[in-house]
Image (cartoon, rainbow, N blue to C red; front, side):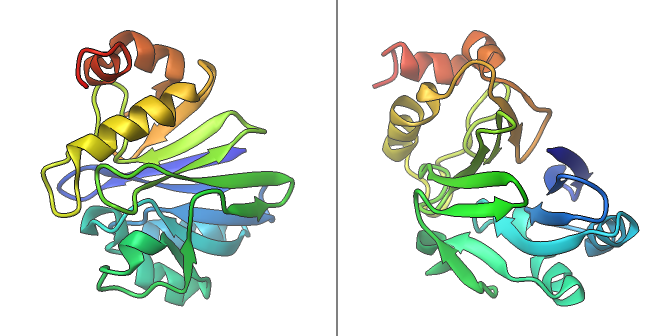
Length: 200
């Protein structure tokens, strides 16, 4: 998988274009700002956009979605729990276990509530990568004090879902740099506190 990251907005949010090859298909993940950078890259690489996947409903991850969708003529995907309260357009709703095809890759939708009710991660086992939105970062976890957030749900998502991922999975979060799960287990103190039972 080829991954192009764009950083923008006052919160320095990450947006991604993922694809297998120039001239092939792509998905856009969390275009929160400056729609032109996403559109220009997709067009410059000759890519065909299959859709926009939003990891959750917050504006710094969704702000440019409708414009990008209109310009590239592709649908917007969001988990059904967040779509129910999201004020923007959603064309297709997602649920835990759904799968989206990207040529010979399978993108698995993983429900990880905590930051919001409908927060998701997007896993490609073939490429050993996971786009984690605002669930888990390199050295901390997503906030749970915003509307729709839940500390208890975040703990459950970390213990029951994220901690089951192999060490070689490379995470691409909604902010900051990516890293491997091995690094998360070594340096992410919030993750360690939950998984080692100190924050139940």
